[in-house]
Length: 468
Image 1 (tube, rainbow, N blue to C red):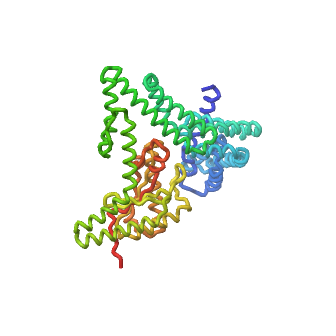
Image 2 (cartoon, rainbow, N blue to C red):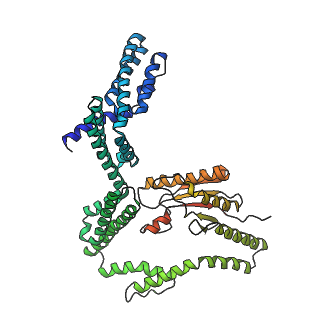
């Protein structure tokens, strides 16, 4: 860090301390003596004088605090003198702040955007460097040096932009970077250079894409997920290969161990487990059978219903089954293939809202999805008074804490919408965020991550509603 940066940081840390303290005006109990100064203080706060005119604002705070001390001691005359000085400093701060909001308009916008990207959290050094440059620009404006203030403001704008971009990168590829750093520390490149190289290449490509367009994050997120996978994979391969090097296991045993899970899967699917010519035949047979089973799922459900009737179940059970199957069909007919999938999980009915998505990092429901939620209402009305659980789920990209918080906020948004617009009782509907803990597809591919980022509306213990 250069000398200028250290000086700038010292100045901005002082400003940060000032900004972190509640304004003195907000700490007093009121009184006619302070009314005029309080009004000026409120105006200064609204204009952001602590940021745009830091010296004048700090002076006003000091005079105001002294006035409070004198007022508490019964020295109204001395308090008036301090308040007069505070008012002068506040008027100066207000004038400078109004000028600053014009001169530093681009800088203020860049600062807001960097804050939205959580630059203080992800890139604190770059953030405070930008804050130092802005503080220096503001003080130049206070001194009346408009040209120098504008020049330094432009530098601060660039610094905030750099902090924002770096924060976006860290938020997206930070976990991948950490995994790669750990792999390098463990010298994984000696044993698994291909996998580790893929991880590094994916991170580099993600950062390059963000350099070109920092707000188009979809491809960068996918690349970050790939990098995380490849980095973890490289470390797993290294551990196994080093066991061979250390004579803990032979090369043949290693291959046989890795073949075993595929053979177990193939055996469960009742396809060939013959690996005499390699794993390709077993893999192809297993994939073909899995795809066939998935395609037959709807038919198997129908056959199960017919079998229940043939087995001579009670009339009530058969009728209940028929009604439920009819209602399931009615629910499925409500939604198009790109809107929702209807899934039975035990006694619960799950409406998997594949057509509902949220902007990155957001939880507000966009108006274009209201028609889909109207169909959700119609589906819920087909059943009785069973409890409804709104489940929020994310993929594994990003931190666990952020994913858990975001999934809960999105589930809460859907719950609040249904209560407000559908008329469901609050006691009937609950919301739960599960973050990345309940994936339904692999997070190693973009399509899998897209499936995992979802809202599920669960009708608990779905039972058929008797028709009139």
